[in-house]
Image (cartoon, rainbow, N blue to C red; front, side, top):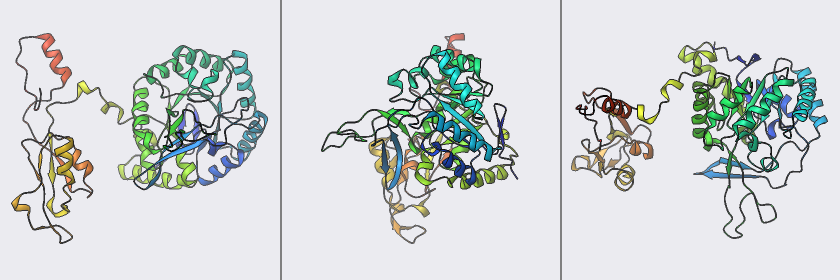
Length: 438
């Protein structure tokens, strides 16, 4: 059986699944229920001087019948007294000593203020500290959150202040609202951070009511930019996790779009040791972790992985610059007539939106029977024109009806950077051709 326990910056967690700092980790009662359900750790909702939240604070995008594909919030840090949060952290640690409780902190940019908050939270029993340098709204307008995390010098400086006082590991939570997140991660590492977590939410406006012209969520006819999260942000999160994994040596806690075991496994494959979940818990509740644990365990057993470390970061070397991709690699689409329903969507997509490589159907296709006994007009791939873009396979409503097959070109691997290097070494050299090259 796979061992899901992990060592994160010297801390032992029963599994890699943590609650992210947010509404599900707002109280001791919630965190204890989460631990009972199977979560290995929890990052407490960010503690700081109590604020006043708006009463309308969440928005969502539904897509094709699926609720909450994207989620937006204009909620700020904890509006509960610091003393209440610290007392409940102590209670949780006493009852669940083997589970991790990480205090998320946001403090005004003064060394003495950070030192005091670090001392108080560690005295309460927190296992580690997560510095919230990522909140994109509300607190950033007050000079905290993303206002710190968007400036490498501030990130390094405040991290170093915290490390002067901290006895427990320090995690820096990174904002995605920057041009180069790896640069910010490197600044955190330089400041002494023991780990980083990412991504925090993405700056966004969720939508506009076209009758009242008020952005959502509506607060007395107005709104503000908020933080975007949920399943829709996973591709962005994976890209940024991989970018940071290539830049720093400290551990990574992956956040963004995690709702199923495979989402977590992808973050881990790109370098994360633990993963943090918020939106999916807000949607479905704490018990989703049961399926996550079962699914990840089964995946690891099926692939012979005994521990998380056996596959952590395995995908990172396969993330390369575009200029290092093999331009002589070639695939083309293949339609399997027995599965085709004759909808012609592949033809329409290719003809209007791509490269005109599909004929709507051929005479040979007329009257063909698919697995359901339907007579269908089967489109035809024009193989000599197909550029292997994948669009037809992506839009096809029938699973595996259109697949992509590799075509051997007989040409050696050749990237754009290879060509550039060869030209630089010998401007007069005859370069191998690349299919489809301009």
